[in-house]
Length: 198
Image (cartoon, rainbow, N blue to C red; front, side, top):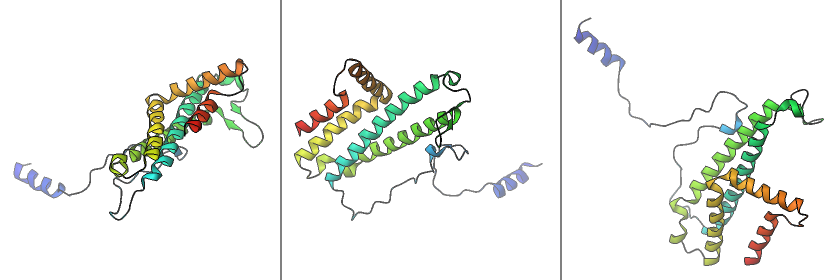
């Protein structure tokens, strides 16, 4: 085939189209993989009239801290669950009682879904709290509210380094206190100390 004919065919087949380039994570095809969700939009639609009230930062920060805590505990539970030999705890490969019976293999998948969902939620919240429109330095936010948010974000950064390790330390403290006959868990002491400081 002559070169001229190849160029004409290529010109007909190949044409340029302007458009948006998007990198989309493969989320699998199984409908049971609910933790992976849908493909999110590529940009936010924030109007210039909308005013971000810095007082709303604190609830978002608390939600992020709780989500990261849940992620750490879910990672800890998942790590222990996958090491558990199903034959030692179940003759039929299932756990539970009337109304709440699940196959162990399905439970493993649900833990993975939970981890993915919590990870995606915490990433989204973390990005939102660090978005320029919430910049506490640029706002007229009161010192007390700003200090509370900063304290919560210090907790967030500590947990975010390694949520599973953080959760395992929390669980070890609880186990130690329970075996020593302590009346309060480490978590309730910390919560009380925070409220006393406010």
